Length: 258
Image (cartoon, rainbow, N blue to C red; front, top):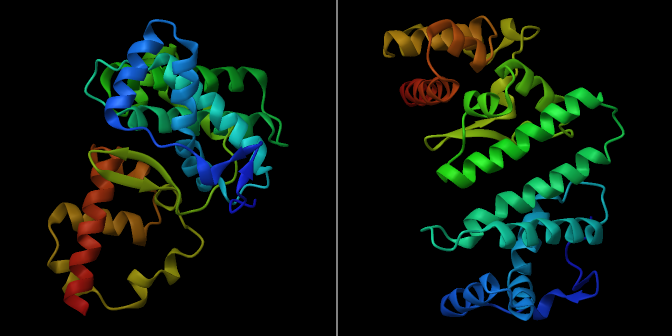
């Protein structure tokens, strides 16, 4: 996907306007009054947001013009639904909306067929997530989304997994309290666990320097090949906490060995 082209969908991206904060406030006041010209100006003034988002999908085989158009739909939805009385920047609200619109487009064009019931649950979950984010201004938990949709957590996770496009192991999938979980954190490696680097090096002394909980997490993750979710369920904490403890433990061990 060529992102270095100057003209996308007939729009000269090199000449896109930039809006000042005071201009944004005035335009939004007019938009709320039904001023279509102000709305058009605000859309053009935020097209750079769409460009920045579609760069995240550079590995996609989709045409950049198509993604730009879909991103513009997400931008327009964000403008129509944004509450400018809240203490939130428009870009903070708009970017997830644009990303969501593009992801829905990519899912709908996915060659892998997903049952209608699963797709319906997934879309309800996505809309529920956007609704909850708009209300609380923070990332909702799976439990909250499941309650909003009226199905179990397992059904939500299964449905969302079913419609996902192939992703990189290093793509972020969830964030809680500043701790980002990546795809690779959710994958166990039972086949190669005996050859894992934790067992390849003598780490007994390094592991003695860990807390009891950190030591146990390292044992489960790298000796038994369990996922962070499995570890979280076993010891009764969140996956985000497991991720944080695991990273701190590995950092401690690395510092000792170096």
